[in-house]
Length: 429
Image (cartoon, rainbow, N blue to C red; front, top):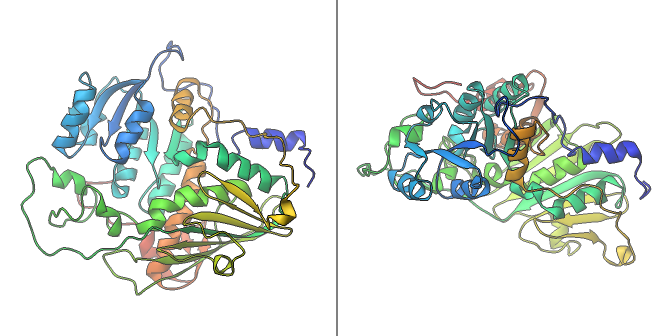
């Protein structure tokens, strides 16, 4: 492709380049309110990842805080003494003056909190992955589509950095030719052994509320506050934790949507806990003027063979695009065209994807103006669905043929049990 971008290409890319973005004419920010006024934001979750999200929106009005840990909640309340506090997010949503909600809870409560917030007419920022199951993702996407006046954004913050933008520009302007193959790896590993002891629940922890829709089990400090991702009931291992960050670049650059097959390799599957490593092979169909593509995910120390062969730098984490005339490797903060000698005199295209005002700021502005976000729930949901399907394939133990339109595995009826989780009594979407 020429380095000169056509007007259609330019408009397609500068329109945030995320499939399915929306521009609403009105928002739920409030009739008669000026975009210069501050949002009233309720935050579900106050520590760890949630603390970073609070930092991202703290210039607005934090009017409500929710956490199942009274110690965390008290610490956040000191910073925002005017905010009302509660332990149950459903109570937070009863507060009438909230314009927008940040959901920064463990994966298994993303969907119930996000769905309730959307149904209540609030804009929503939700941490990744968008939901804990494929079924939940689709339900959240439906709600977002039915409420196009509500601004949505998933917390893949690296999407807002310039490095990803420059990498996308190189791929989409044909710097390495047609891309049929992508490798994505992350060195993190998560696994655990389910505890058998039953210590008392600390007085500051509201365990039943933390479990939310998940099946009942005794409290144990092994689960919270940070290690819950190692259990299927609460998270999805390294793939669910980091996949949305790294696979995002492949989805963005190659305009990927739904895979047609998914196959996973790993150690023997356990009923309760995630594996220490995983390799997932995705096949995506041709789309628009782009060819079919194979994308492979590696975690827990596994890496593409090209690294062992010395053809690609041995970065701990990375995204490698293999093109017809070269390769591009990237991580969060750098990218490189390969082989280096071949691209010694290469001049990149003039940047045409505008810099972001900030991932949280995009959402805040969209709440106020009805403008677009880069990781709205249509784009982010489809990305999350593919990530979660990798875990479905691993737990099913076979290559899956995915029928995205019917929301089912075509070749293995038993695998469909992993597309959704059964909620405890009293919980629903």
